[in-house]
Length: 494
Image (cartoon, rainbow, N blue to C red; front, side, top):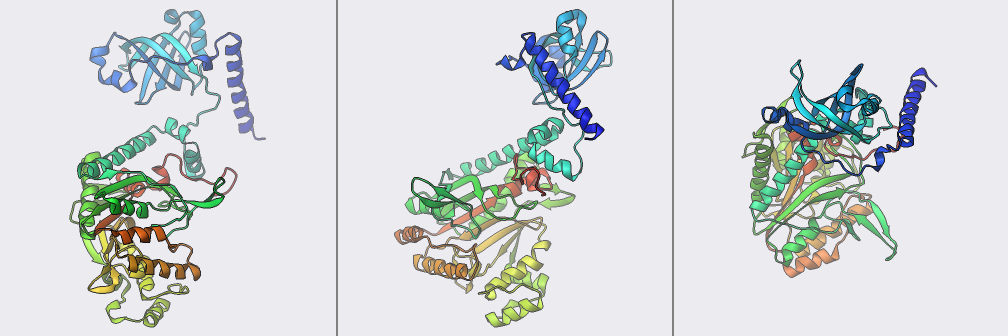
């Protein structure tokens, strides 16, 4: 055991010994159930002229302390910030000051006292009573740096927020962003609804689901990968504008842009098309940025991004022509497309068609160039099983993906409402599953039945809320905007 470990263990033992002494003296802090505070630190500082000389009660965690004989200076941190406590034996009494002198960094205290300003000009509270509300038995770190500590920050977010208060600001802004999204939709007449998280079919997106088991029914069930098919059932049932904000679950890899559980908003509007969804998307992003940041022009990791509508429109085949140098207007067969794919180094998988190869080339060569907000349209029908076909070119669909900072940030369709076509596309997806694509859609006969009842022309849109928040809070990773991101168990390498 190293000297550092010995010292740490000794410090931890000292803290527990202090707690034992308190309990022996009948001063168990964990028996205290409440403390009536009157102010937070920032409000005292901002209203000093009014509060100078007034009695206040504050509560917070000790972040630093300095002692000079019979006088102690203690900095406490509450929800809003920090404030200095001036504790003097003459004012507190010898017994209570003795308790104050053995407090540790990390302890949570309540303080009653008078607001004043020290000779050095620092707004402080002259303590008249100090009460230990919770004893900290751990040592707070002084600094958090390096990759190893970054992982620990995610695992112990509670410590991260104590030591790095600016982290709390990110999550306060996250809440404001989510609230602004809801405001935007509510003001436009959308109804917020709730749909199942557990289902017997994982549909609505191409993704691997998490599987669980329902004991009473003795059947496997799936955590939802999307809520699309349920929301469209509600349009069939007579609602004209619905949305749901909630968690989705995809059993896939993790990266700075991916977490297995993430927040998504999906919305559907009857009697409109994907063009209307484009307008709604760019207006939504502009509204949320203006509402939460006061500007439509944001800076993400040194890159300026202009969210002001209208955004650029780009056909997928045109993007492939521009960035990959392949003109698919002259490539009409799967065989020709496969030849090009091999030349471009694309991995060939069973069942790949011209449409799949356009999509692969787009991902490989084009996405990296889509920094400013861009709507990519004209997706091949093979990768868009829930979107209407383009009447001018049935190989394409009326679908778009929105990209910002090279990331897909939204996905939308003119929703397929032809039950015969939809059933056939589900059958085509089943063939893809048989060829090894475990992300392909399964058959949802009840959804086909809903379409047979009748779905009006409908526009649908899904937005990755976490990615929106990453951009608007200027954070490098999705883990920085999720309070408790998915992590491997302690002891396993990340």
